Image (cartoon, rainbow, N blue to C red; front, side):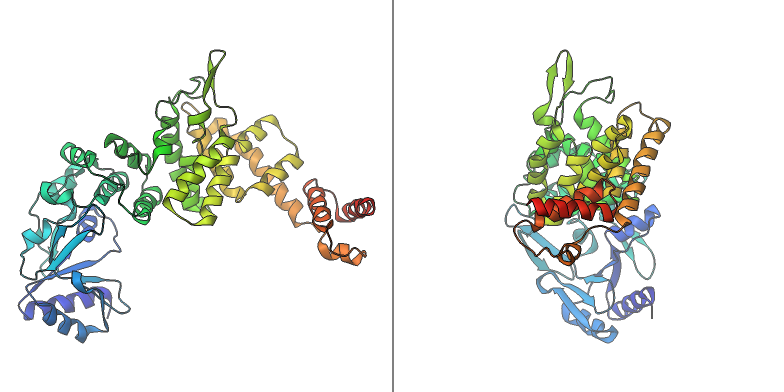
Length: 448
């Protein structure tokens, strides 16, 4: 039995017992948009929890994902089966709700707790009839995100982020009335994991992730979770290099350029976060010098801001290190290519980079995110950088001085051992053959 057959069997059994089974939420929305959806949620009406559980037990090993929420699953199947429920806010947080299962609540009242009209659509599993109590189908056609209920929407502040995320992913416009509600919603009580979850969807699934941030800007909801990004607004740049405008505009353009490259990245999430964070330092370094704006060493000054930003969202150390490093090094590939830097200099850059391939992708997005720049202009710069990376790999593939070489030469591990190996590594980056490098390291050892 495959999943569609399982669902049909479930719906038929529910109907025989006097109830109805409906597809709900994103599955209906995505199907009407012609998009593939992996989230298949079923809501069962008209049956008690005991009756539904008895049916589920005939189909497989039942699991309870939330007893008080009336949400079930079946082992080995990626599906959620839920009973209708009423929710009452008890606080400001995303989880601050009192939930009451009510199998006989009715479809219209069950749908009113949904966030947006396009997510309040229900589809009868057996007949295919789509129930639309709040104008969701028309809003899908118009590309509008509109909240379902004034009374319920504001109970969950995560919906502010979801509105921005959906706007970015689907290219929707948030209705003015929904924007107005979002402007009044407090986000500080939300857990960082939920913020990161919505941000990740926007960065990795949207064709234009900039819409996520532009929407939050329109709602005036950047300040608590994204203050480093908000600080880029109205930070000036020299028009001859940045005709696109301020640092915010440039960052949004770079984000969208990066989105077109993210499938090539080895670390897509880190890559997209680096595109967002790469110029954070300009907010604290930009100054007017002899009639032109400059942001000297903004890449260095921005490291602390980048770390603070990522740490606000996650404790994942590898991700923090990746984004900090990429932001620090983002300017070097293009500068070095334009300056005709030496092989040794390139080798040092790639050695210091946490991911050289992704660094070159970030450099590309940064260059093309400057208004007026073209692919043709960037082609020779990019070609030089990729040649340098190929040469770096070639140099790193050659034999090099290792600890065992020092031991075979009679040098025992001690205080100077690390210094000798660091020197050996510098010789390796300089392209010195192993035999000559070993002689130089041994000469250094004798001096020490």
